[in-house]
Length: 212
Image (cartoon, rainbow, N blue to C red; front, top):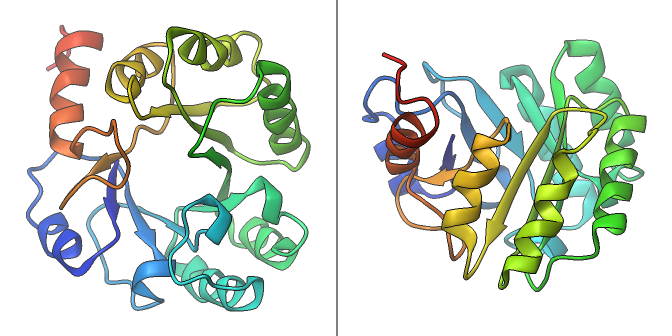
């Protein structure tokens, strides 16, 4: 999946080779609500400032952005911490048939697996389509904490590492069933991230080598 978070990324997204991505993510906290039509389905989000959002946007403008974008979206990404303030977004998404990606990001560390399982459980109880967990992985133990989430998960997971072991962990988790695997289009968003085109090529080589 390719991340559209800047004007250069938007321009390059229109020239991606066919099959390079399955989804594009529209970062409304960086680009606003002027989403263009695309041959690929959109995941839309207006990220919370504490989880990497730009512009230090409060809940009200983020909520308004996502409500305006929902008609163009296949999925909407809402942080688990924002469920209460974004309740109207969740309700409108449900009425429009837009799936919810319930997300949790920690750019400093990987919390204990019990904490992360609690986040996944919150996502499942809220009726999310996917639970997205992204944390800093600076040791093999951090990778192991995230890997453990795949065992008996109550809903599909999108799991990714950032930092020292980010790139290797992302391939590992994709092979274990991570359903959304994010890559940059113009430049990396976080350390340890593959380009969207490079990630798809590696996915085909390492995980599904016999697919056409």
